[in-house]
Image (cartoon, rainbow, N blue to C red; front, side, top):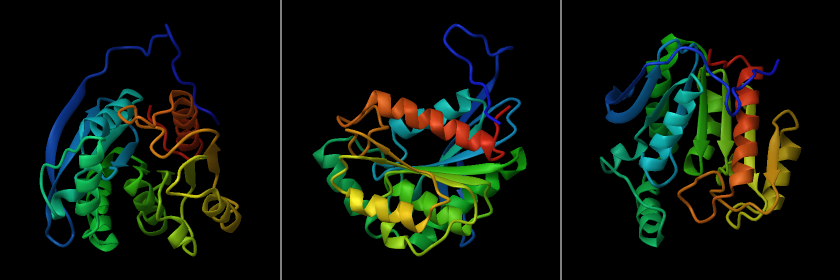
Length: 242
């Protein structure tokens, strides 16, 4: 069943109060990390947003804000805290270079402990989904295989092809750009062939990072279509906001 989303000029009902704050999470191995959380009143499901290689920057916080506006309790754990705290990088060459330097030492297992801490933190609200972008898109794939969540969505996760032998245990949806030079279409096609139950969406003319409005590669139409598909996918799989 598709959930109806408010359109232009429609009202969403009484004004909703949003609690926005930076919080501190503790992972199972004792590591403490920051997270940006927005908790709207009346939320009945949660989204864990997993960052790109640019940290929990202004864009990722805006993604958390956006899902909160749709009624979800949303949180973005700062996965770079294991390497360096307070990382907020821009989408220029310097930011990309620094992001790669920071992400390289991060192993999958510790990163998943941090994502699991965020999942545990919001689980009391209801079903939890993980949505990741770039580096986070690959994390979302692992979360679908390993974590007690209801659904997962990965945007242009460059390492998914390398984990093609892993099978998600929960409904999972993927999004890729047709012109993403870091993720060739033959890899995307291989993922789709290996996992026929996973919806794999490819956006014509879109590049890596097409969903990020802070990047030069932003594609507004593809981003809007992908967001709509994501929201419908979550609702269809029991992760409904209100």
